[in-house]
Length: 414
Image 1: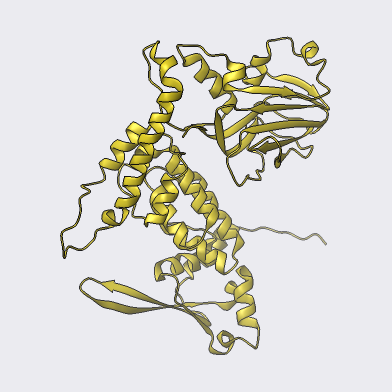
Image 2: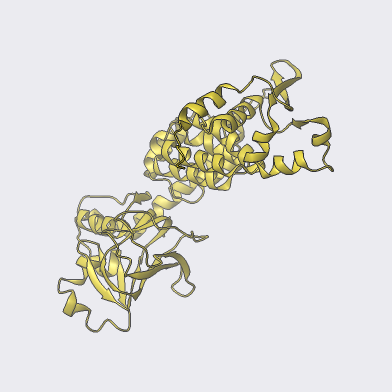
């Protein structure tokens, strides 16, 4: 006897979603302190009635809490939350009923922290996707500060990188950050704008003058020492850059620009930078060095264009069971991604290493004999520091492609 199966899961999901707030057998209590201007903080208590099977199905933490005799929450049929806002808890609970998370990106940082604490992995995954899609110059600073508060290192890093890359817009106004967090933004010299433009941004945050006796210190006042220190640092950097490059560039009527730059293909970007210099320094030797592996005696037989065409990703190159190493003589890279310029066959297996000194190597990515579409980010193991060296090692198959290094490039004199 044949079975007939028809269904409408979307309709069922909509019904379940509408059940939120319609009762339950378990109470989630949120106790939070609400600051009142001119008076002491007031306690606010919010209660949500929910069904315990939903909590236990989504969360291993709630499952243990509700189904273990040793937990007070099981016997009282309630949990008290004191470290998150009622708004974020409501968003969190609505997700358990609907599978949908929605809200301003800045608010989702706290929701993501809730998902992390209560081990709701799907919600963490969706929040992360929202950050990857929605981070921009307008919200990056607030997301960065919130992620630091809720100890979400991956979200914090994504927001910080957005600030660095979109600095002119992200730093148009002063971030509501602690001195320590502002140091983190300014310290590495990875902000992708010139020192002259950054100086204008910092000076545009408001008047910086000493407080009179009895005046309350403002947020900007607490950041004053950090701002002044980095204004001085930028002047010193500009002096070093002028001393190193100024004389040779002055003959062509240009001045050295003290700035970091973001690119999705740093080798190609270095070639473009070389072409833009009026003095036309050599690409190989000044902007980039290349070392071919020991089995490369026949490299020129299969790749008959000038080497710099392959080193700068202007042409794909053939390589089998060998390696190629790129080294930046005067720059370092904050690595954010790796990809291949062309589709990669599953017949090819290669690995990518990076290094800050050419001696100690970090495995950054492994293609693992998988089919990889062009420009698809490889799973990245990030180095703990800036790097100057990149090595592509072909283990199996005939490599005919280019390695694309994505990141922020900064002059070593900075």
